[in-house]
Length: 290
Image 1 (cartoon, rainbow, N blue to C red):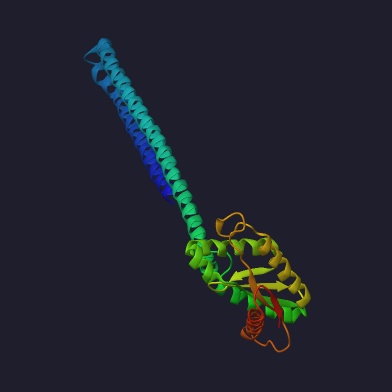
Image 2 (cartoon, rainbow, N blue to C red):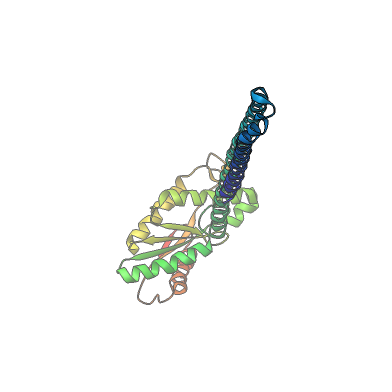
């Protein structure tokens, strides 16, 4: 819009310049016509008294005036043409500058929109991600649990849930420090991601409590997945950043499969919690099916 305004203004100025040149030209033509009209009269007036020499002198003076008028007209036209060309160059320069500013503004707007999108994505991650383990948090888990239960019921597919708790985490914090305990929780999240399928969803629900949603997985296969994770825990020899197996970490787990009585996510989750409690009563470092 600004570019069009500048061009329109400069075009108007150029037109006014050309109109001015045409005006000068018309005035010159009128002047020449007047001189040409006076020529016969002047010649007749002097023919009787001044003779041929007088007439010649008058004609010479008139021709000089006519030449001067034509030269003046040419000068005015050249000035008007030069002015019009300067205005055109200035208009093109200003239009280019306006276009550059417009492109810069559009680029800055695109960069700002990209920053806003990145910030929105970061806020979304913060709202749904545990800041310590990097796993989805309780909010994300609750949303996924309700969604996967609905999909499993509609499609008639199995869905299993594992709720596990790190054994003796408080003792690790006391003996090795809270920082070591936090590092253990980070390592737990890493091992869970490495041992599970891409379609499974591990999550950290609380201090030492984790959960896993296993889509298209029956109870027996879910128990096998827990056993595989138990082996990874026992084979890992650098818990808390201490190589050599100085720290031992295990977990207790409860695993259940979605059934007809699980009408709400909270009921399904509570069955898994009950199975977890049974695993703790049986001596920990084990998985109980509910």
